[in-house]
Length: 155
Image (tube, rainbow, N blue to C red; front, side, top):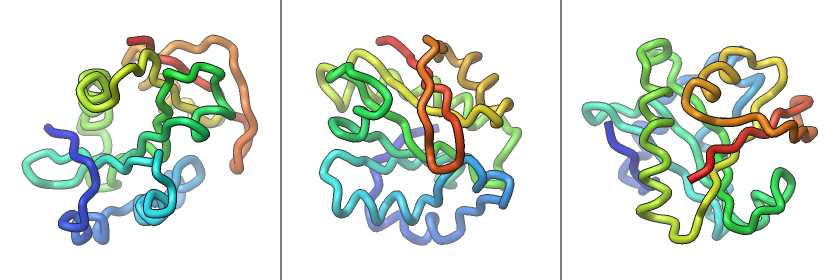
């Protein structure tokens, strides 16, 4: 499994990435994230490939993207984390999350905290993030889809 910054050569795989209505309650569509990144310098779409298949997608957001969730200027935010419907429950999300700290250390100098916000209703995601070392420090925020629990992973 390998993490890749988005490049147009991945568009065909993005086009076939499927999220269910249930998933869309809690996350965004990769295409929208990629479009947003074209106008936002501090937004980095990331594709997670297993045997050249796109299995998981998320984006990193720095600077102003982090501000609603943390005052730490050295934090990076994970946004729109999802696993393609056809690849769910195969351990890909957990594997991807385990690769993120090394990827951040390699590509984002000075970052000492990885944060993400998960909907309070998304219990399976909360359990996954806790299992992968994300900590709930009691920070809450309101998102477009309801209350969010802000989790931190310290590097």
